[in-house]
Image 1 (cartoon, rainbow, N blue to C red):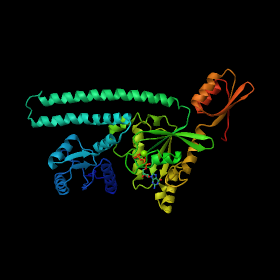
Image 2 (cartoon, rainbow, N blue to C red; image 1 turned 30 degrees about the horizontal axis):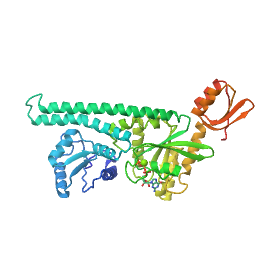
Image 3 (cartoon, rainbow, N blue to C red; image 1 turned 180 degrees about the vertical axis):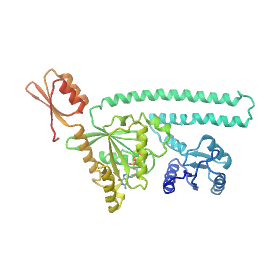
Image 4 (cartoon, rainbow, N blue to C red; image 1 turned 45 degrees about the horizontal axis):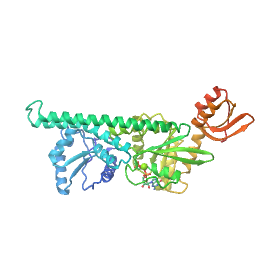
Length: 418
Ligand SMILES: Nc1nc2c(ncn2[C@@H]2O[C@H](COP(=O)(O)OP(=O)(O)OP(=O)(O)O)[C@@H](O)[C@H]2O)c(=O)[nH]1
Ligand SMILES: [Mg+2]
């Protein structure tokens, strides 16, 4: 069921949005047997849809023998309940569907805990309203009836579970933070983007590793994965693949994945992957920007990576490159599906790395063991040699470290051409 509010362009995107909902439904393991749409001036407070449309929905459900109604739009708990009562079939909205997919696909214990946390937090307010709803039917007999007691029990149980999950997650995240520290010196890039844009395919292409899971499905990747990528010419970068975003991503899910995406906060560069062949790529790009903002990542340096260029006709591809480059000169256009199709991305990564982590030669005095250790920890050492009593290290140095070394009296020479 797709019933967006009337506004400019809503009709045009409605079909694409429903196609996406169909793919989500399929991913969740259901088959779509019928589709109904309506454009609304404003949602009906009781049933979201108007009365006539609810009747139509009921007829369609009877005709197709559907056992589930999926709404693309967000329903209040009472609206969902009212439609359920009117039609006699279970109703879920998009948020519940997405939560369900995450729940069945999450593999690592961290992802599973995060999804459970999101589901419980989603349920908590609905639980209250669900019981309130029942209260009404009992005609207000007894203010502290069994229903309310049950509600309190349920609430307490859920709250206890939420607290426990939060504690466990905090523990996992501490371990992660320790791991991150050990990689402090390396140049890090994170792949972010709309689900199915080709993030995992790009990491696979960059590393040549078949172990990386790629699938023509929404939310193929849930757990972040970091791999070392050799760029040639003495450059190496750590690239992290992350969970994809989608429009109307449930807020609780974003909140609970915040920690997993902590890695991304640490990244020197975000690689925002856009599916250039998707008719709504512009909307998808905005959705990703919005979620990044929500996650507090709005200020990170971003490289726009237009992927799947092989699916565009030559003139289309040229027109797109021209239009995008005029607005975002740094954008790159790639295809992970053709040989050498990722070369523009490799070049851009080498360039980004050189400008942000220039190679320097550091001359240290014999007593500078502490500085040497710091270079190894925070920078990327390419080689080291002795010149008389002095130690000469060639390394990629983040700006801050270079400043500190100079302050501490080390002799630091930038080597601009490496
Ligand atoms: N033709 C073409 N297909 C591609 C390209 N890159 C990825 N694909 C396909 O797009 C689909 C999704 O690719 P993934 O790499 O799994 O996408 P993802 O962004 O990791 O998706 P999620 O993990 O679900 O967020 C797969 O069927 C890929 O084979 C490309 O450059 N060209
Ligand atoms: Mg993926």
